[in-house]
Length: 272
Length: 251
Image (cartoon, rainbow over all chains, first blue to last red; front, side, top):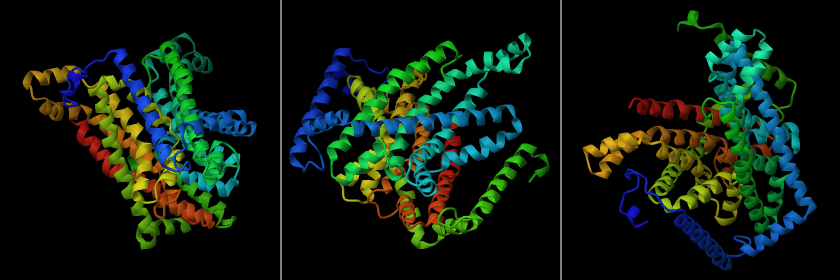
């Protein structure tokens, strides 16, 4: 570490290296410091402002032991799953339409996509509450319209990146458009589909809780709203920590490997 | 201008937009205002959001806070990325801990915690927005620092030994596209997602205005505020981010 401190950051030519042991020690030290600081701070302020780590642990145990709270978790997962499915399907259909029926491309890519991309998620939630009432439909609608531009933009990039020479070769082997799509186009798109799903999953969590808080009658967002009204900060902490852990694990263990696998097997280069 | 040269598909795009507006107008005629107000009423309110002082206060409050938050997030995010590069011992803490933690933190979670911890003010709203935006800046700038062309830096080092000179004359321009990328993403997320900060405890801003309007079934204002956000987002892209991108892409 001593060598690194002498350099002004950003000017370092070769980034200095650190051994795994140093990194682990520093990481452990930081984690311990945070835990101690949290305990000390929690002793000084009322629990509704900052619950002690033990209280959060108890709330977490209660969370997984309670069928009602697990039902809220299930509701959120259902909302997210439904929204991702609808948004991905719609986005794929629109992107394919713009690609194969060229006349529709400006309408889709220069009108619909920028409009959806600029529209605020909170705006959709508040509008949907009036249109669909406080319900799961509101939540799924909100997440879907927020995710749609992500699907549209990413899948468009995939279609643009299709290898022209590969398509030509495909055409020289057979003329069936359906066969061509299934054998050449679809596999080439898979890496982009995986990347799109990964982005959508990350964004969906950010939107889902807000939508559930203002427009849902169940789900984790609804649950933290109740906890907020009861000044039950330990439950709020539990839900937030659980989401951080779940989103991170899902990304590491499911979406990142899926993306790596598809781009290694079907991709030319790794998609962005 | 040269209308004759425009491809038919562009005319179709405009035609469909017009058709959507007409469909909205027709649907709204059969529905009460609190469900779907007509385009004319919404357009009038949209104009009021930028001209009438009672509304303009909210529009300006949101705009200024978004700009401040984006800049602060860029500074803090870049700072964290630079720390990560300068002190590799902190690599696990920052890349394995801080970054995924901030990136997975639900945005409404920050809003709720800020409402519990602070008395509502401009500062508390900016805190929430900055917390939501930092991971986007950290990821982009961190990626830029990793991609930075080592050979160009090496060449620069053969000309001068002064590290600060290298950082400003070579490092910064190389990093510029990534800084711009961070700016662009944060600006979009600030308007689309980080506005939740204005929903809990705030007394000004477009988010607050929308929530209050929804509470009194004033759908006209809700829709107008949505379109105002679209307009501000597009204006920022066209007037600020795209000229910046052109300026730095030339290097």
